[in-house]
Amino acid sequence: MKIAILTILLLPPWIAAEEATVAAASNFRAALNTMVGVFEATTSHSITIVSGSTGQLYAQIVNGAPYDILLAADQERPSLLEKSGHAVTGSRFTYAKGRLALLASGREFRQDGLQQTALQSAVRKFAIANPSLAPYGVAAQEAIKAIGAWETVSDKLVFGENVSQTFTLVVTGNAQVGMVALSSVLAADGGFRSAYLPVPTDFHAPIRQDAVLLVHGADNTAATEFLVFLHSDTARDMMVSLGYGVN
Image 1 (cartoon, rainbow, N blue to C red):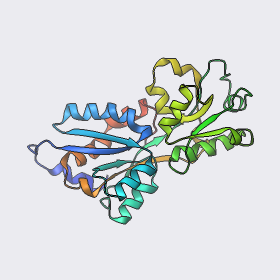
Image 2: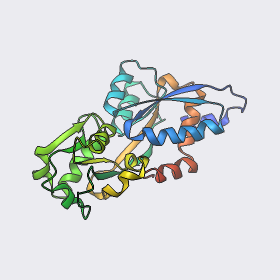
Image 3: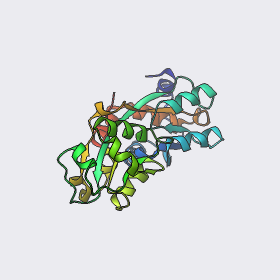
């Protein structure tokens, strides 16, 4: 664990309650809601969540958005923020590893294999997150190629601004099939659960999601304590149950 995060453990217990703003990649919003509930119930602090694509959040931070923590969907942007002086050096760590799922919007779609589902003639639109904004989109492209469906699917692609919007495109029927975050499927009600297939993690490069303490939150006790919480066994167990891998 990084020294910058450990130092908060040395602070006295009477530190006053504070509020922190966490900018989180859209795929992590549902999981974060649950985790913030546990954190707030066991501390005196409060957390405000802002979510969006990692690319959008990065641009907002560079342009002065007053966020205290970034929970990204990649490693690149948190690293760039450290290098540019927008984040506290040494505070960055991987808090989760993302998982993909192939989701079909209609029960008529066969669920007997990733390739078979992707290649069905009834698939007119195939949704993925925008690869230029969302790491889940890059991983989706790699996974589609890995299952041998790229030549068929590439002309049918429609892009969500982020992976959460991609999930919405599928469940509303605006796309028949899509590569979405497994966490989004698990967070939905049971009606969608029979229409998805987990994508093996070796079908794409790891989606390592890094957290970083931003300069705006360097002196914010709520922010630093929340990052400590993300290292805890409680948080790690929650992330696994919510569709993420952990280191």
